[in-house]
Image (cartoon, rainbow, N blue to C red; front, side, top):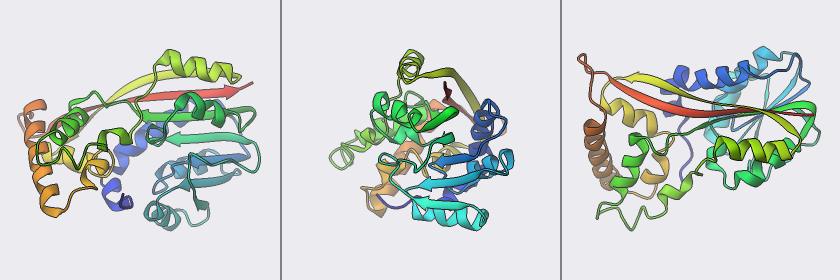
Length: 257
């Protein structure tokens, strides 16, 4: 799959940063010495961490060279490292492992989250936010259009790129068994966007990537036209032409004893 597009992602920088800020607000740490930002992207979440913990050693990790390049331009004083997050292990126990909008791209949360919790120092926190929108029309329609005859064979595996999230009970059980107390919640943000093309622009840098990557230019244009037409049926426009996009997200803060 092609690299992430940092510019496309940052078209909605404020909206994408708000959940990271809400997550960080629930982290019950007065100080932190070692902090890692998993899936740091262009550095918008890392900037929040640096402001909250100015004396900490903060490292941003991402698998995308383009995102890391943008993060280094934005925050030249911090350390950003290209890494496979599924295989990552720190050199020292971490006071905070922050993962904003990234772990839904990694499989097997029953193993992954306890593994990450095992990297925490005593009293340290694993803070996670993940989009919980696979059943929303914005994402269901991606799969529906992928079933159309011109795309079916090319996009047979696109829907598997993201992990289906567990339940509150699952995450509480997995992390409690790992020796953590767990704070869980779900928030639905409502984003007013400039028409149905605004929804397309929102998701094309994230959820649409696995669906667009296997298609050439004309096929991408065809897919996007069909997808936007389907969105117009699912999301009625406001009187002024704006479209409201509900966006549910799952949050957890696990603190190691």
